[in-house]
Image 1 (tube, rainbow, N blue to C red):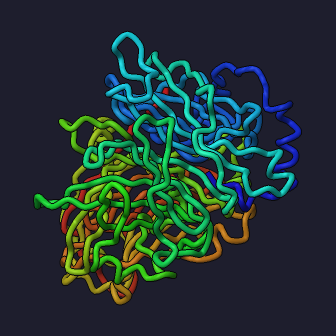
Image 2: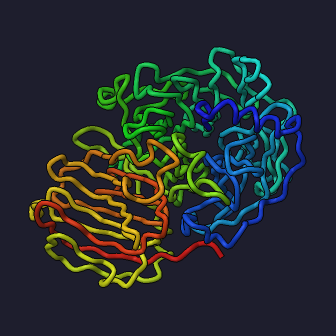
Length: 534
């Protein structure tokens, strides 16, 4: 959770609005409409109303995926943070539940994680059932106003009824701020079977810290990591640590995700990652990976400007075996200003993570979860064709491209075009383009003519780019369009780009375009997607 770059005036105004941090619990905010406001996503998660940012506390238990998130129920801009709550049985359709955690005298409820305490190490369980335990950061506004460094501490709460109601631990905080760094937040906790302990990774200014506990209550410092590696263009925050198998082998590595604001190569906030080993105390970079991330250089999870603060679900069953993640689909450069009123922000699509060993080293790939296929109402195959100029998709499919999924394969050897991709259009002449540049061997996302951008000088000031990571002669694009967003998974997830945009009327038309020659579409299919909200 980052508020470092939110103007102080806003922080002070919302602080005044929170009377002694002791307001009464609010009811679940009711949707202000049927989820059809302009720019409202139809198959992405968004809050019923008001402000949302980081996803928090994702955990799977008793058939439900829990999604908590940073939420301010009283305005559509950042304010005193709560944990709002939703659940899903399929990662696609979501049910809003009452707000889970409210600010109190110790501070606002900033980002964190949740786990199932299967062995009841905390003693919070009842009737032989394991408790669900949330671990979060308290942010004390009194201490911030006094310019103290001990602004942020770590705390826990527990639930014995499937996350529906919560009790904060009476002896919070469980980790006090050592007053070395004001930014001391966003605990992500896992059970490490190798060291038989709970392990917490914290974001602390310009590095990560690891802490260990036998019971989620008593914590000891283990080690730190990161001051000599990775991007340091801004504050590190929202970390995640997990083991993952290398695709196609019995090898296992540890991945450390670390969000940063600012510092992303296309501007603003973004997510970098590190690959290495963890021995229960210390995270050490894999040797070849270390060479790719000297201080000042990052390996990036998503090259679009609008995938931030993503962390993974805890306790996904071994029978499933996936490492699942969701992110906040915005950027701190302009999140407070985007032109929506009833609500602000949405989440990315849920993704599965896959670690590949490539000639360039270990690389993290992402794929949209398979459950999204249930949203396809109709699918139209596309023939192999040489395209000169443009190939209209409207007449081929009869679809509206406000909500659509495209899976396209292009033959690199048989394509002479310098640049090609997909163009979304509306009747006002606004366009959004995403695709590939052959000579530069890179992907691009172009929202410079995609509608309303007056709210931010940096929102549409330039085209955004991502390097191609593979050498295969087939360029594969898997795309999702949802009213005001595009998500691209290129080359089976080797590169992803997530971006939002705000056309003044919906993009309903689409075409495949090529510039400077022909482009060979080897095969493809287009699906119309159903909305998830009733």
